[in-house]
Image (cartoon, rainbow, N blue to C red; front, side, top):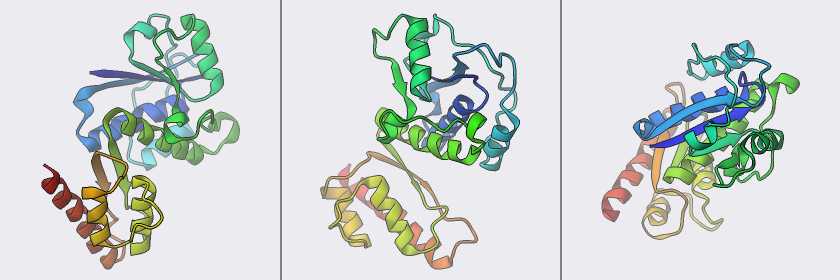
Length: 233
């Protein structure tokens, strides 16, 4: 089992968001039994407090229930107890290195590094009040972390309003070369013979109110993935 601890300053906004979002991702991928996930604070300022109400509302709007979560402080013993200890910004990492006396086993990381945004901080809504921006940053970082640890890629078609938008999501997430064609035959070729990102794929399909042609085409895309996986077995 891989044990992951997300850390921020107070453990009432960013790190709980990462904890519950990553758990949700693991559930989508059917991998929750392989991981233990929690979160903590570098400071003692919010000990025992629940997730900050505006952050809790954002989580709830995205279908995540964080009730019962209260802030707890990072302990020196956490270094031995967890496989990954992931901060939201460089200040978190500095505080963790000081508490742990360094990082001799290379367990510490910055969340957005996993999204290819090396050194960037997850937006802190305590100051910015942009709670959706925090959600977006955490989503990117956690999806990148899931890929690094398991090779799983999330393909999110929920906001796609037309077929080109479906291919935009595929191009972005699979990291296609520019010359790859945007059609089902080309998709099959990518999955069975051309370089692409991802070993396993999780789909979020278009909403019921999406245009029918988009919903139907998304199903055809998913079927191509299934056929390609069968051919490669």
